[in-house]
Length: 113
Length: 113
Image (tube, rainbow over all chains, first blue to last red; front, side, top):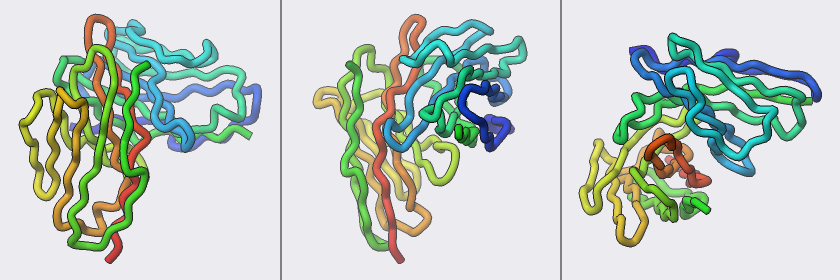
């Protein structure tokens, strides 16, 4: 099976712009979660989508949003970018059963200048 | 507040050494504890632990969970330079609408030839 695929791999944006990141889960996985990884805060949970519905949301401002499509692919959007949004954004998919681990993609490295 | 604490923060060893990485946690709705290895990109899944006292093994790596004392250890025997990475501990919280991982800050392991 192909792994979790994230595009693009790298992005450079300026403050105030918006950005959309894409994630294709492992075939058969219907849960997609997004995490932000920074040197200072480590990996932090953004949100989870399952069956096209947001099921959980982490402690991030409303500028961070997402959606999931009927084929389980997911997008994450960040509006009005700030310098502090520079991070590695990781997508993970799972079968969403109690004992199914999350499998991560290679991430999108976002740099805001 | 849910938290996961890993120790040590970093570790330098020589090839052939045995290392033990620690992870303690305080969370509500604990479901599982997971270990991931992160080199340059995606965290790769190593182990998922749900029951106390049952060791999981994969080659030179092994891990065990103590749900009474709320900690886990990851052992790596006969270390190799390819084991150099950040090792992440995460606690899975799963129940009802909630399905997410709380990550520790990781242990940076450097294995010298």
